[in-house]
Image 1 (cartoon, each protein chain N blue to C red):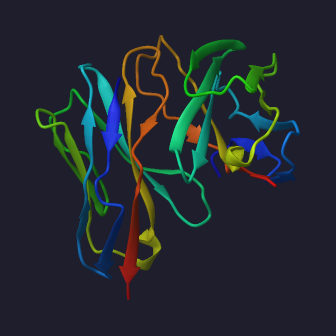
Image 2: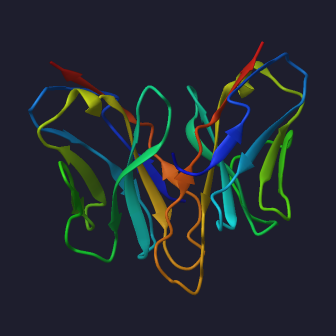
Length: 116
Length: 117
């Protein structure tokens, strides 16, 4: 079975600084997707960034980028120029690929605090 | 706004009771997923429906059941409620178009907060 592990329950960053959130996963499949979701106090689940396993290039979305190390099964999220609005729970998630594209498997989450 | 709606937003009930949570997917999305978020278990997949048929089951208790109707809305039924069932229940929808062959994002609703007293 696939598992997702986030080893940092809480992280803190100074406004305008850079922070990296860690995630490791375990799977025997070759076709899959990895995601970072943000959950602010409103509890809405917001997709931050997505990485396809077959792509070697790391995904980037504005201030958010990932470091995808397929062989090490590592998928970290880097937030640059942190803003107060980045404060939230961040969840790493896995989803198998292929036509069926089933459910998401989530890590336990990392609570990110941003200090002004 | 993701386009996925869930009702009610909040639900407070007593142990032993039965409740129904409702989800309306985005227009055109055939697949509905239910997730439970609790302090103990984190975010867990419960069940998936695709075009009215059950597609996959996760860690769903036997006291819980779901269905997807012809208009594609879905209901999650929770019975014989226990204190531990208190959680945030999310519904998500996606297109799941096999012909497209491309990634289909899951769009999350705002969730239903269930409190069992």
